[in-house]
Length: 153
Image 1: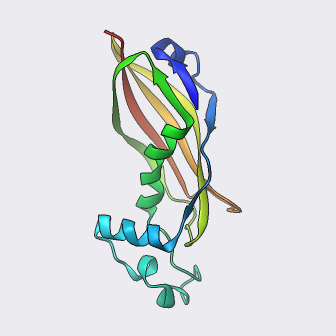
Image 2: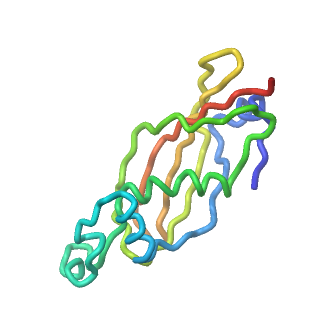
């Protein structure tokens, strides 16, 4: 876990690799749970027998599942200290270059791509988030996540 020293610490890290999370396994139980939460029960995600004859050869995780794990995996990698409030502000440029077959191992690699200063007491960090799959040729997900950090009062 990397500790970043407030807004000045963020300013000093623009353009740098911040770190990588541990690997997590996306098994069929996780895919089914995400299907229930998202109300998306498309057979390519939830029917292993039918999905075996798909181009993927098995069920695959929802693209949104690959996106949804980013927030939790970020918390394994770093925290920004000396802030009074942190808000998830949104995503930009989200892509799903590679399907995630059931049983795949994923991890998050994160860089601080940009820092914007919308107010005198806050910064917007643009985190370049790449969800890698173990043995994948391309990432499962690439997204720029915006987080707003308010400095100490």
